[in-house]
Each structure stands twice: as structure tokens, then as C-alpha cells.
Image (cartoon, rainbow, N blue to C red):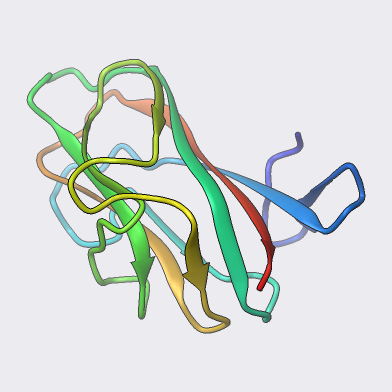
Length: 134
């Protein structure tokens, strides 16, 4: 699927109203809320996130890191409603953890934010979201 950017529409899966968003993760050097990813709802309509996963192709240079990912009121608020405390080792990381799960609603004015527990220097990966209209 093509990567979503502000200048492109999200990718449609099978033309049936299912959207996939794929955005690069930031190798955050601090634990700032939204420092790993901060994605505003780009469609201006309520969505349901049916699947969320991280594809980490290169792990961070230090191994004691985790990521929280979730739906938040703004781009600088931490949330763990999708992924809660997942390690940043290489590989696919699906929704889960103590508080993380799908499906989740994503209101028109909300953001999906990702926050690191420690520095993620060297990490390379993408956030992939699959959504339908609410």
C-alpha cells in the first residue's frame, strides 16, 4: 500500500470503504508525548480503527524501550489505547498490552499518538492503521 502523506489520499483496500494509513515512525530522543508519531484524523469524519500495528524494521540501539500508541484529544497527549508498552525490537507489533486493543473510535478532531519510554535512536519503522467509517 502507498504511504499516506498530507498530499495523498489514504489507500483504499478493495474499494470498499476500508482505509489503510502507513506513516513513518520518528526515532524519538525523548519521552515527549506524541514524539514517535502524531497523526491527526485526515478524513474529517469519525473512523473506527480495526487494526493497528507497528512494523519495526530496525530496532533502537538500546533495548530497554517500549512504545505506547493510542487515540488522544490532541497531538501532544500520550495514549496507550491501541498499543501499551510494546518493546521496540525489530518485527511486527500488533495492538495489545494491558490497555491496548482494537477496535477503537477515532473522532474527527482526535489524533493517534505514539510515545516512547526512552530514547529510540536508530529505530526505523512504520505505523499501519486499518480504518472504516464509523
